Structure formats: structure tokens, C-alpha cells
Length: 486
Image 1 (cartoon, one colour):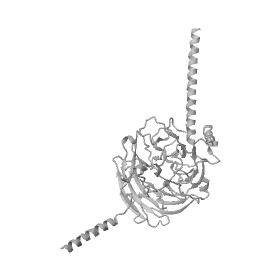
Image 2 (cartoon, helix red, strand yellow):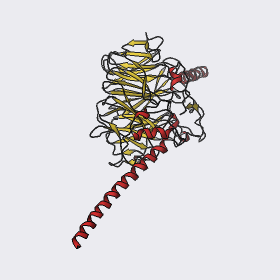
Image 3 (cartoon, one colour):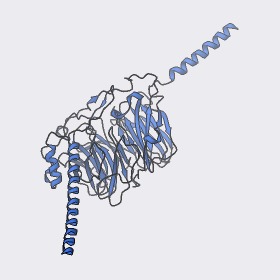
Image 4 (cartoon, helix red, strand yellow):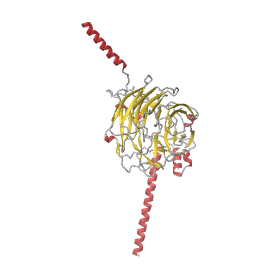
């Protein structure tokens, strides 16, 4: 009897050991999402209702930008992250586009510079002052004109200064040097509408998804498609694709039966997917947001009320489901904070900004830890704001990975960064106000301070004009009174 009991105990212990041994070890298994308190969100924002599968939101360690409804053209709202609560209806917007704004993207090398594109066939680059806007901002630094139809995608180069990519409904991809306002390269290899574009880690390649159901990997400096795959997802609805840090490509799309699906592909061997996983049945396009430091992907479906997140590993099955954050209201769009903007003191590894009909709700993703000390394993050195090369160096064939910065003491964004421009500056041929700005940029003052000075000058000029009008009115009254007494 004792021998039987011993055998049973040994069998149970063996089964318990086996069950523990097959559980995948990961420090991100218990990541949980939590919406911030109501007073820490942003209320009364008129989120754009344009029918375009864009995120409608962009965020960095300084600012939150949201594409909003606007009469008489396109506009977006830019708020300092600290300006939480209700947004006044009269709060100044960034205006300048004559058609609805379709996409916005913060520059990874300057937290005060943002690019936008619109149905008016242009892209614009803006310098946002450190302080809150006191009046509408309507004068961009550079206007990029080269597309014949609406421009739906803007994307900054990850490692080269002043390089911006735009893609339009004319099926054209143009790469610009925003310091000169001139196009450097263009590609017309896409026969139909481009759904998404993503640079790889060092900016040597980018991948695209297209309405012709093909996934392409492009080398912009050679102006050629180096790899492509027909129908990585068999459905006809829009796909999305992003590069991972290992050079693989993560995709989202639909099956032939309209089920949503994700995939992981090796661009050197497109024959078979590394992973292919069906999710659910829904019409919303899945927007992927990638954290290169944690090798995690957050999937946010348009019209969904949940965010799924996955971890990518080097061993099969490569893509591992972690958890789902769910809330009551469906999302209109989403913004994803760069890693240098998260709160390391709270073990926050990601922060998303969920757009609802009339507000923006931050969602924190946290790894539960008991210690208050800095968690080295959660925060490897991350991409910093300093670009490792200039536009000309990249164009000549140089490739560099991002310059990394430590997160140990938390990231403190600089108050202002000088926007360096090439010797030939497009601003020199623009009207007086813009030309004077480009001249000032050559001085030692930072551009954001110069923008503030320009605002002050405009305010003073407006005050002078109003006082001159008042003086004229008083002089007329005095003249009338004098003539009456005579």
C-alpha cells in the first residue's frame, strides 16, 4: 500500500513538474492595461470623422496631436501632455491645409516638429512651440508639393535627419529632404492604393501593403522592390504591415471568410509564414503598434473596444498571445507613446492614447513588480532623439542603427531643439515672414524660441493697429466736437 501511495505521489509530482516546464517563461506574461482617471484624460475633442484608416492621433514625450473636425479646411489639435481635462472649444488649432487632414507623425529626432498630410495633395512640416498655442498656427515651415492626388501617409525616417516619406492616392511614394523642401527619390511601383508603409530599424528598407493584395519590401535608394508576396492574407480588405527589430514583417489582414488574421513573415523567404493566427470576425482594420525594446505588438481594431497584445520570440510558434485590455466604448483611433516617454518609476512599458468620439483616454501598460528600484530587464537602452546621420549621408548609401539612450533616470525631453537645415533652404524663396524665420534659424537661438518671438511680434503689431484705429476714432470725435462748439 505504501509503495502504491509513493508511486502515486511520484506520478503527481512528475506531472506537476512537466506542467511547470511547458509554461513559457516571459517577463511580459502578466502585463496589464489600465485606463487613467477621468481628470487625467483629454475631454471635448472633436475627433475627425473622415473615412480614412489612419490612427488620427500622434504622441511624443511632449505633445499629443489629434486630427479634428474643422470647417473650411483641415486642422489638428496639439496639446502639451500636461494640459489634461476639458479642452476649451476656442483652443487654437494648427490650420493650413485646405482639405481634411488624413495623417500626422511626430519627428523622432525633434519633439517640436510634426508632419501632416491632407486631401489637398500636400504634406506640411510644422514647428510647434514649447508653450501652449495662443492663436491658430497657420504657417508651416515647409510645404511639400509633388502628389497629384490626396496624400494619405507621412512617415519620418528612423535614423536620418530631415528625411520624410509621403504616399498618396496617385500610388506614388516620395522621399523628401524637409530641410530643402525638395524630393530626393520617388517610386511608382505600386499599381493601386497604398494602405500602409513601415521603415525597418535602420531605415535601409521599407515595407508596404497595397490594394492589389501584395506585400512589398522596397529599397528606396535603388528604387526597386527587393521582395514581394501575393496575398499574405487571402481576404480583400485592407492589410497592415510593420517591420520588427529582427527584420521580419508582422502583418494584419483578413481571411477569405472575413476573419481577422495576423501573420509573421521572413522577407528572405516569403513562401511560408513563420506564424499565421486567426483572431475573430469583425470589419475593423487592425492597426499594429510595435515596441522594439520589448518585442511586443499591440493590436487596435478600428471600432473595437479592446486592445490585444502579443510577444514575438525567436523560437516557434514565434507569436505569443499575452492578454487583452477591454473597455466599454469603441475606439476611433490610437496613439502610441515612444518608449522614452513612459514612466519607469511605475514599471510602465507602454502607453496608448485611445480616441473616442469626443475625448482621448490614455491607457497604461504595466508589468507588476514589488520593488521600486529601476528594472534593468524591462528597460534596455532605447532609441533616443539624436539622429546618427544626415540626409545626404543616408542618400549616399550609409546605414546606421538608432543612437540609444538609457532609461535609468527617466527621459526628460529637452525644452527645445534646433532644427538643422541644409545649405540650400526652401524658405529662402518664400514670402518675407518665412524667409525671416529661416534667416533667424542660422543664429544660436532655438527654433521654438524664435516661433514664440514671431508670435509676440504679431501680437504687438495687432495691438499697434488696434490702438491706431482707436486714436483715429478719438481724433474724429474731437474734430466733430470742436466744429460743433465753433
